[in-house]
Length: 211
Image 1: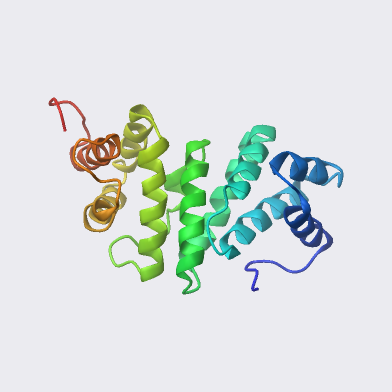
Image 2: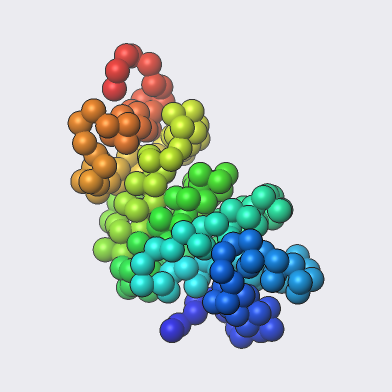
């Protein structure tokens, strides 16, 4: 197993042991608290959790619950660390589709917990994405359109339109790749949110009746 971005430290080892030995997010949280980590160590622990999540054979909601608990404990610092980690992730997904799928879903769940998607994927390549980036983005947005409210999706899209280049790239990705997601069924809530997001990205407004 290759763990990216890390030198092996006592915090790295302790966090890795806690993820492997804990029954659930509560037990992990208890184990982590017993280590009395400082803020820098907590940043490292957060990044380890994200990286380990990407190594799983399939997506495991356990890691999502751990990150949500971290966000509850220290919202500002945890959200910042998660964003910075994913800024690194999208630059190099390592040619690993499974990792891309797991981390795409994880980021989608983190966005639902308040993480700033635009900051996290600021350096992503949406126009000419690699296979891994397509998988990452599709799974991320599939979660977003499934769990975020209309107001949250509209706020994301409006924020994106402040950078016309970014909004055009995301719009292209949503139309070309995310449109094929299994949840995109006529009459579904998922499809309605997807179309609403694309409309705001394109025009800056919702309005105009059913979309």
